[in-house]
Image (cartoon, rainbow, N blue to C red; front, top):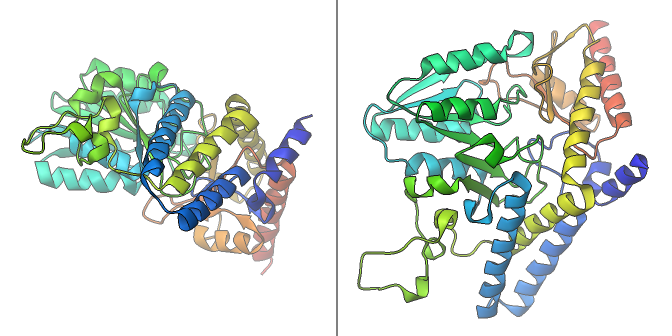
Length: 401
């Protein structure tokens, strides 16, 4: 029965048959429905033009997409803003806080440049202090030690914790619910880089009590490039100033007093939407991806399968003597990160790519900069067995040289 479901799913994801697709953490495979609707809408716009009714259709689709995202992450529709990238969402929050000189940000040494770059800019712009917490990996990681370290780093000047849901560089799933509790006990915000979280691991932003969560459409949610979303808890909306403004950020924009410098923001999180009109083919592609995951795949089934397949791969890799797993056991998201003795990760990945196993290295500045395998719900055990067999073969050949 399950094999029938996997076969059916894989037919709707043609690219996963062109190679062993193990790189969803960079870009997820497009489903057939997304590709078809994007092609159809692009052709329609090309042949028929983009006139006034197009806009009303667009705004309807934007609202329906916000509804789908809200349902998927446990939010309310009003708490979702559409963005172009996950990085844009991180910027919108970090630039929107009413910073005072000397305020503090706490983050970790496991964050993506999508967080680190905007933090660097606002640090200099507003004379802020940034505290970077070291987070251990592999067998050295201890969750309680990490939580205790975080608590000790907080001061009366600390305003926010910026942290990933799942670390792109080690595969660790951070304990968001526990971190949010500590933050709120200390009158702090928590801003989550959810690029590797939504669609890979369980997420309920209300239950976790998250303030801000920026997700990426193109990764585990299988959307096209150019569309993502930002969650802003309803009770936090008024505490963040919009960084940019556009007609879609304004309430009743056609009734605006054009001789006045005053505007009324759009309701709740919609005020953070920066695009007057989102590219409709991309929007519809994302909408179809969300429908595919929700209706054809099934959210709970998807998350359970990712978790079980990651565990299956981990058990196969653990017995290879030359291989050291970086991802802490029991804290995996959709990733397994590892190092291989006497191999530079980039060289190893290039070798495996030539064998049609699409894996990638973590950039070298993000130590320990391991090899990263993204395990999707559409992958099969035979694909993972083949990966392990080829890893052993590549190691053995080098050892015999």
